[in-house]
Amino acid sequence: MTSHTTPSDDKNTHKPSNFLRQIIESDLAQHRYAQRHWGGSPGDAAHHAAGPVDPAQVRLRFPPEPNGYLHVGHAKSICLNFGLARDYGGVCHMRFDDTNPEKEDQEYVDSILDAVQWLGFHWDSSFNGNKTSHLYQASDYFGFMYRAAEALIERGHAYVDEQSADEMRANRGDFGKPGVDSPFRSRSPAENLARFREMRDGRLPDGAAVLRARIDMASPNINLRDPAIYRIKHAEHHNTGNTWCIYPMYTFAHPIEDALENITHSICTLEFEDQRPFYDWLLERLVEAGLLASPPPRQYEFSRLNLSYVITSKRKLAQLVNERHVAGWDDPRMPTIVGLRRRGYTPEAIQLFCDRIGVTKDYSWIDYSTLEGALRDDLDGKAARAMAVLDPVKLTIGNWDALMGAGTLDDCSAPVHPHHPELGRRSFKFGRQLWIERSDYEEVPPKGYHRLYPGNKVRLKYGHVIECKGAVRDESGRITEVLAELIPDTKSGTPGADAIKVKGVITWVGADDGVEAEVRLYDRLFTEAQPDAGGKDFLASLNPDSLQTVRAMVEPALAACAADSKFQFERHGYFVADRLEHQAGRPVFNRAVGLKDSWGK
Ligand code: ATP
Ligand code: MG
Image 1 (spheres, rainbow, N blue to C red):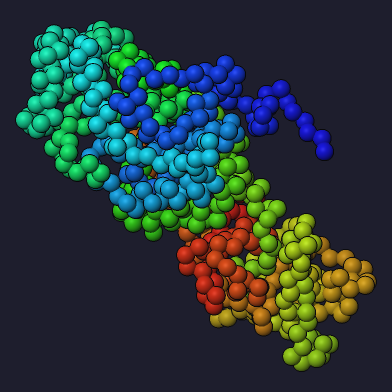
Image 2 (tube, helix red, strand yellow; image 1 turned 180 degrees about the vertical axis):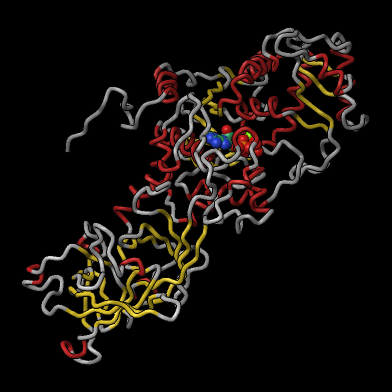
C-alpha cells in the first residue's frame, strides 16, 4: 500500500493539519502540561472535578448550553474537539454550561448527549486502570466560583458596583472614548467583601448591585473595562435550587470551568476572541491566589460554520418549530443533528464534511452542496441499490401473454451493490404490466430523448427490451397507460440479449410484486443562500416546495427493510427508510440527497 503524505498532512493522523493541530503538537512536544502543579492547598479547590488526571494528556471540552437541540454548526465543534482528543490520545469533556438559572429542559440534555454519541464520540477516559466518565455540569462549580470571587475582592481585583445599569452603560465609554471610573471603584476590600456577602445573602434586590473585576476603565478592549462577574438574580436553578441568588456571568464562569477540569486547550468560536484577555487575566489572578493550577488553560478561537441555505441560530430554529413551519426539531429539513439523522445523514458523512471544511480563522460561507457531497460520497459505497418509481404510470405489454403465456411472471435480478458482489442479488418479477416513471414517456420526443415514444425501443433495466406503441389518455388528456410490445430474446443477462442496440434504459417496478410506499421528497428549507443575513426576515424565503409527498411504487425487497436503512434508488438519489415512521407493511422513505447537485438548474 502506498500512502502519499503532503507536507501539510499531520504526521500522526494523516489528517490535513491546521493551526490547532500545530499548537497541540508543539505543546505536547514541550510537555507543556506534564508538570502542571497546583498553587494552592489541594483540599481546597474543586481540583478533582475532572477525576483521575493524566497530566500529560490534552484535554478539550464541548460546552453547550442545554437550551436547544444541536445543529450542524455544533457538529463542527464536536468533531473538532472530540476529534482532536481522539487523535492525540487525550480526552474531551462533555460539559453542560448551565450557569444561567433559566429552566433547563431534560429533553435538551438528553438530545445533546444522544447527538454526540451518535456522531461517534464519547467522553470516557481511562488512566491507571481507572475509567472515568467526563460528563460535567458547570453549576456544580458555583461554590468554587463564589470563593474565587471573594479571593479577587480580598486582593483588590474586584468591587461591588451600585451604579444603575444606565450609569454603568454610560460610564463604560465606547470605542473612541475611555470609560469613567465608578464612584464605588475605590471601596476597600473589607467593604466590598461585606457588600458582596449581603448580595449573596439575598439582602439586595435584582439589579441593585453587581460584582465587577477591577481592571482598567480606559482599556482599548471594552471587555477589560471592569466587566461584571456576578449579578443578583433571585431565581431557582434546576441543579442548585435556591442555594444561590447571585449567579456568575458567563465570561467569569467559563475560564474557571475550564481550569477546574484541567482543560488544556479551550477552543471556541471567534466571537470570543476579544474575551481572551479577560480569560487570561482572570486565570492568572486565580493562580496567584493559589486557587488554580499552573499553567492555566488557554483559549483558541476558530471561525464558526456558516452554511448556505441554512440557519444556525438556536432561537430562529426554535421559532421554526414553535410556529410550525416544520414538523419538529427532527424534521428532516432541519439542520439539527436529529433532523440530519432522520434525513438519512450518517455520522461518517458529517465527520467527512467537517474534515473537508477544515478549521481556520477566516470568515467564510460553506456551500450547502459540500454537505450533500459528503453524504453522497459516504452512501455511494454502502447504500444498497433499489428500483423505485416515484411518479408511476402503468406500462402494458400487449404481446406478453401470447409470447410468454398468460399470467407468467419472469424472474429478474440485480446486484445489491454493483461494487460488492458479496452482498448478493435482489430479485423481482417482470410481467405483463409494470410501473414506469410518467416522465419516461413522450408522445413527441424532444431532441436527444431516448426513452419511450411511439416506435422507439428501450431496455427495462435488468429486464427485457420493449418497443413503445403509444399511450392511452383519459378525458382530460392525462396519460393512464403506456402501451408496448416485448422484443423476444432480449432479456438482460441472457446470451445474445445485447445484440439489440438501444439508447434508452429505464427503471421500473413490477405491477405484480411492486409495493406502494410513501416517499417524502425533501429539498432545501430556504430559497435564499443567506436567509437571515443582515437581519432579513428568514421566514420570507421559506421554500414552499421543501417537502413534496408522493405515492411511489418500490421493488418488493423494500417492504421488509428495517427503519433507517439507506438505499440508492437508481436514477433518483439516496433515500432512507424513515427512522420513526417506516414500518413493515407501511413503508415510508425520505429523500436524503439527489444523485447529482441539481440545485438551481
Ligand atoms: P447560544 O446563543 O445559545 O449560546 P450557541 O450556538 O453558542 O448558542 P452553545 O450551546 O453555547 O450554542 O454552543 C456550544 C458550542 O458549539 C460552543 O462552543 C460554540 O462555539 C459551538 N458552536 C455553536 N455554533 C457553532 C457554529 N455555527 N460553528 C461552529 N461552532 C459552533
Ligand atoms: Mg454559546
